[in-house]
Length: 282
Image (cartoon, rainbow, N blue to C red; front, side, top):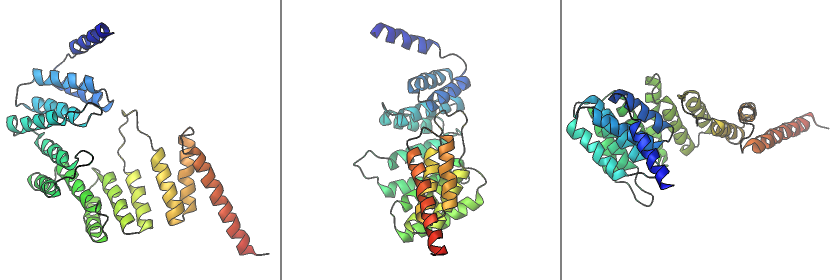
């Protein structure tokens, strides 16, 4: 038992070979597969091999911090914060600085359940990234987080303001973060009770989703269900609803929503048949 675990751990450590860049790549691969212990070993080994303050060292440190920050279970956000701050101090000119500042801002934003974020501090942190790194991907992500804070209020006035900014963003950007921008617009339209625009925003979000072919967990069953139910119940577009119900049935025949899809198709057929009968008369 314990001996086998110990030997496995020693073997895992001994397998961390290669230069820092190779180990960093291995760390991110393990992270994406939720193999967090392997990710930690790879990032730690990369930090050891790289010169402190170098770009490789900063990237390895960022990977290690992210793993401790976001892994579930077993997270250690305090250690992650220390690692992020170490990057800022030891590698101030590294390309990882914008992402590191964004990670620290996210830590202020995503507090444990039962706690309330200091929204003034969170907004300032995101705004700082926008101003310090204009055009950077981290700044674009910070912009979306700022809009999400406004939309979370579920207030028509703040939702309308966020809609304007998000539409400008979506029209300006070619690729990066288009899907989450449209997803946030769908939230805005839900608050504004504009279901047709909400449906279009959800479609745009789905169609611009960037798919990682190496991710073994990617699936779209929920997206098909979401689009189908909005089309059926909120907009009354039965043709579009049928399209997504049938896609779910075709692509995910064992999904828990299959029965609901079949019932929905029968329900729409029955309702349309009833309407036709009433229109044709006796």
